[in-house]
Image (cartoon, rainbow, N blue to C red; front, side, top):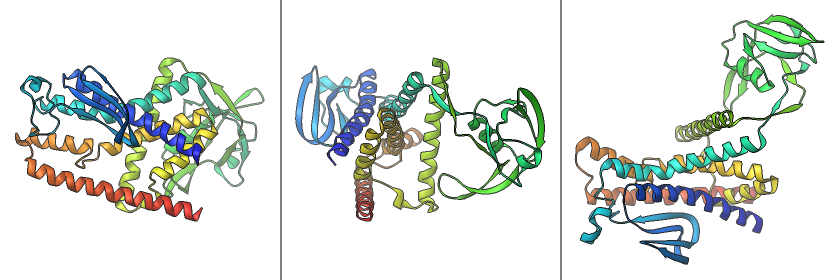
Length: 355
């Protein structure tokens, strides 16, 4: 448990620092004064003042905050600080400051993926047929164990993942395949068959298959900086898309909300990933960073997305949301977050009880 707790503190600390650093740097860029930069909430365990800003580490490691000059509408501001006030900045600058937190979480994931690809490259499955399943298109077309698939419909095949991608992306039309067998190139044509499979959410989905399995062998592929960046951007986008889709499916009810996890689940998973090695651990941080960025963009008052919603309303109507309405919405948003926190804690406890 101690191992998991330490891993949890490290993970949350990195995520919160990155998020708040985004707000802090954007505020400084937009010439907004920052009074406090805190990792954690509650009593301050450590604090040090540099210039105007007090940097703190606080007791409860479940978040953090950046306190800016004039952050709250209607707050009393020293006339000397008017030029540093957040409230007195343009809507564009305020939006940049608020959006910078989630943006830095996405940027952290991108940097992690980039670093992993530059250090370790990729380990991919070889495009070699290990087994041909009977009574399938591949069997009928005469594919054999040991065949190396070189092309499918003029698309170069470098790994078994490429084979799956090209076939899955097809519409079921006939495929022209180039294989290498015994040092000779052979050309075959086959028609994929439609099968019912499961997607990542456990839902039934139609997919096209030809009936082959790989050998399980892998090869190492080094990536140059440009390739690593392209792959990192693709992976970050994929995680963002998958996370948003997961939320939509939970809201619609097609995926159970029991899958939601809270701090206890994160601590357990962080501990497991830390034991599995550095690569697994930092990949887990990237995954959580994307999740944190998306959650903070939800249009819920008290979250960054809620503030952006207020700014959007002001941009359209030409009037800022009244302080009275803002207070009510913020209280409602806080109540929603508390209810969500109670729910995920309940899920965590049920998981622990059920083992």
